Figure (cartoon, rainbow, N blue to C red):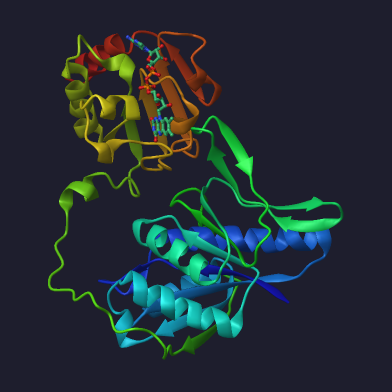
Length: 337
Ligand SMILES: Cc1cc2nc3c(=O)[nH]c(=O)nc-3n(C[C@H](O)[C@H](O)[C@H](O)COP(=O)(O)OP(=O)(O)OC[C@H]3O[C@@H](n4cnc5c(N)ncnc54)[C@H](O)[C@@H]3O)c2cc1C
């Protein structure tokens, strides 16, 4: 039986898997069903986590999201992240076990190890994919990752000629799904041939500014677009913050707003920013460029306020408000006070 490996993202402080791991396992599990359906090929999902310890709950959740095997690559050298040691340990495991497909999270750590691993394996890598699929070409089934290309104007589906076929996918691109009827086996692997880590961790400091940009548990996102700029003034961004505080929402922004320095980078949603899956997204003066939409299209309910009835964003919304976004913000503040 063929397999899809999911390289899991580990929280090295809490010794547990990060949510993106379950998102990728769930998607890989969905792919196994597609492979069976379109070409009768049998695949299973193997979750591979590198760490010195891992909590039981994470292993269980990996099984519930679709992993048939959980490989715990365990060693003291894996207690904190090191790009060289992690790449070497994964490659050692991979060379023993092999696989046809490897999916990595496009997190900061995943983006560092994935190219190193694929170089060591002498194979290609499709980075920052927005979809993963299997397709049939000339009676053969191919792994078909899709990513934005040409300045993000087009989406390209790339069929790799090298093996294993590897892809990175950003957090929140797919939804983690858990099925209580699923189960799997836990296997340990002890790496032996890796170089000594030349980097020594002295201290861990948590950067609260990046946590502010973490939209993972945010239920309501109010997104400030370029249409909110008032004579290059931040007035309406501050007003949006005021509304957000009252309703427990977080303010996000588009890249155009970030580029002119009106909002910090960590608030940016989109292909080169954060991905949100909030219950409610409201865009104020956002045009709906494809690169922005890539980061918010999975929100459950999408509302946009734009004074142009033909704005692209309205192609993605559940509710359209064709109006001056500043006027709408003033009205909301007035009604809330
Ligand atoms: C490689 C690449 C990566 C990118 N990555 C990202 C990314 O991650 N995230 C991102 O956001 N962008 C990204 N972009 C930029 C993206 O292409 C757009 O330029 C950007 O999203 C536009 O921002 P905006 O909607 O705020 O501004 P605009 O496109 O200028 O739109 C402003 C909108 O406001 C409306 N408007 C104006 N005045 C009012 C008013 N008073 N009331 C109501 N509506 C009003 C206008 O009708 C317009 O639709 C990327 C671009 C490239 C090339």
